[in-house]
Amino acid sequence: MNLDKNNVIIDDRIPLLVDLDGAIVATDTLFETTILFLKKSPFMFFMLFVWLLRGKHVLKEELSKQTYLNIETLPYRQDVIDYLEQQFEQGRKIILLTGSWVDIGTRVANQFAFINDVIATDHEKNMTGHAKAQVAREIWGDRLFDYLGNEKKDLQVWKHARRAIVVGNKRLAKAAEDVTELEKFFPVEQLSPGTWLKAIRIHQWAKNVLIFVPLLTSHSLFKPEAIVSSLIAYFSFCTVASATYLLNDLLDLESDRKHSIKKHRPLAAGKMNILQATLSGIALLSTGIILAILYLDMYFLLILLGYLTLTILYSFILKHVQTADVISLASLFTLRITAGAAAIGVPLSFWLLCFSMFLFLSLAMVKRVSELIHVEKHSGGELQEVSGRDYLTADIVVLQSLGGASGFMSVLVFALYINSDQVTKMYNNPELLWLVIPVVGYWVMRIWIVTARGQMDEDPISFAIRDKQSWLTTMVLLLIFALAVIL
Image 1: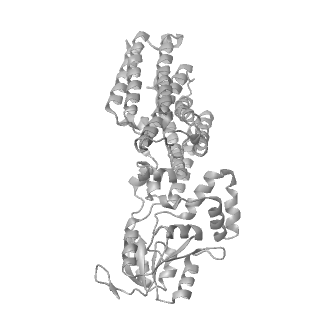
Image 2: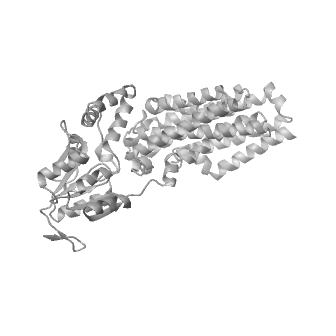
Image 3: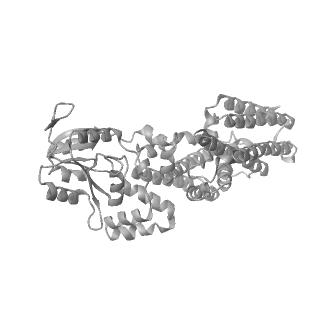
């Protein structure tokens, strides 16, 4: 016999059986491998149903064959790991009894010296619920094992266990205590509204303010119908954009977990699970499309669907292709402005399209350069590649040159716009618009200098939203435009 730190007697002859999914790791390896498969072969999604019809164990086996899950980057529950190490040191035999495919379970077990053996899903049996309870009883007998689990299915095991160790909420702990003795409870934080809002990146909704740009440039700011249409378009784009952010995070789980900053995102950290993210994405996407169908015209809906299509292509393919990724990002920003024009039914200016494309291409390269600088800082001077991107740290100089040039091309486009016939029709004093050029030029230069110093967030738009000087620049620009109209 041994005593734990609370002086509770531990019988080292009673094995401790431990679940993996949701217990040792704050995720589900079946969902993880499903995401990896869909990322690799999106047009083969129907095979998931084919394999599932043959049995859940077949689905797990095929997904394990078709993908490689990096078990080192999974979000492990450190409190559970610490507890298991303590039990092992006190003489407990610890068995990983999991519904995960046997290869995944074995690789996880090989990471931890405290795991003595592995029993997992194999060619014959899906090791969950009743099957798990049956195996435990056949090997050890009733009440001759303890079990650490995390879901309702585990009640079938706890009914035959001597003691229960619960990873979950208080309701599950109470249910386990009703069928056996509760040895330990690891409370799991439920998905909070704050975490959900962080996962859908509600702060990124600020980017969709671009939808209101045509409202300003067409001088429709005091037309109630135009304002209402722009607001509906804004919320439609916001919900669809949030759905695509969730999709992007699902596809980037492994690379995000390797990143020093992105590893704290709710999905990467295991604070939001894959099922919750999937359902949230479907709900948000449906909301955005329904708003567009009910309240806006077909042209806006087509642009919204085009935005969605390009985002999906970016998530699956284009973000991994050098140069195509930054062009895609610039196009996504420009589509927001196009959608704003469609929402209020005004023609989109050639000058506005050209200006926005060059400016946002510059900002897209800011995003890539900031990522590369971040990698270079931790590379020790060696040539490194950004995880999931087709760039090397050696590309920093080239991207800085191209990005700066693109930013000042937008300034040039605006200078040409000032001399166009369109300006004289819309502004009483168009000469004042020349003041815009040094202001925008100053902002572009500042953004690139901040980036070169390694002080840029990886998203320049998010940086601008929090940056006081960017706000001041915006106020000055609005004042210049207002004076050009009024005076």
